[in-house]
Image (cartoon, rainbow, N blue to C red):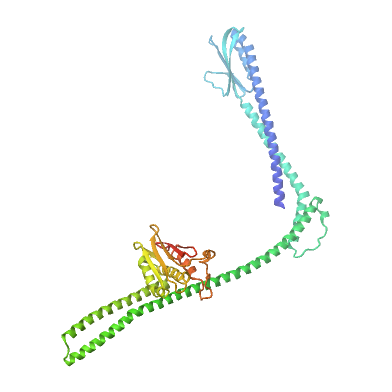
Length: 506
């Protein structure tokens, strides 16, 4: 309350001060114009008197008479000096020197800011001399300064009296009522339950009684609002904790499913590689077995001394052919093992390295050969000049393999022969575009916007969890730093487009 009453008193005092100051400025301006008008009137009167009195004294060259006239005019405080100069060698002047008046010398320079000059003529015909009156407005400035000081002193005195009066009035009539009102408000806010309050309005000014009643109701309403807000905040905190826990569980489940899907992909790849490696291993075993039998037969013939030159030459030719077949089969098996090991390392470690794009896509297609042969599909690979990538080959393998697997499972009916086209090209100097198109049945328009959602699948009853395209889209964004989009028309196949930078973001 003290702050409120103090501010109110300051505002009222400030308003009164501005009002008094404005009135004082107006009065001072009026007085200044009056003084200036009186100064000009006296100046004109001085000129008129000197023009009437000086000609006689100058004509008679009566210097005592002239001094007496000039001293009389110097009685006006605005006149600093008067000089008379004539053609007959007359040079007489009087100047104010402090409180005394003396004759002017040629070196005297009166401190004047206004100068009045006129000719002294005799009978308005003959010019006898030239009179110069040196005037100063210093007295006007001093008078104006004194008025300002008087105005300032009056304002300060009035402000002091008004301040005391306001403090007394506010203390007596306003502050006591506001203090009582504050006590009632604090009581209403502290009470935990509303109680019928005693009628104390008689002790407070009647004009504050409605305000006090409203303050009581407001305090009670704010108390109830505070209780409601606290309960709502507590419920919100509980809901927030449950939501955080559910989100953490969802993230954990999603991570588990992603790991499970990665391991499943790696398992299928291992099975495909094992199926593919059976051919070179089988050829190696059969060739080695045939070579061993031929060698055993030739050894028996050599021991019996019945060996022929033609038989030995046939053995050498057969051995050379077998060695070439063994070497090619071993190289094929080694290539498959190396490719599987590289892809497995990329899958499990998210390793970043440099690799040629087209060659890596060929490895992916080669490792998926058993799967496409069993599905009766042809995969065409088309690529421009090989691009050196600085990215994550494991993530790229997951995206491409998931897209190829999705086309194999969903684009064609069982046993239907189909074609999948895998194409890579430079989009610009820093980005490549990999598109996978099929000649299958296409995607229904109502499903086109949902294919990248987790757990969305059109074959829910056939052990498909709906995570393939979701994981492909996630890997395309992070860590490959690109985008995966799809376009499709029912009956005309689908096109998945992967746009990624040549150098993946760190």
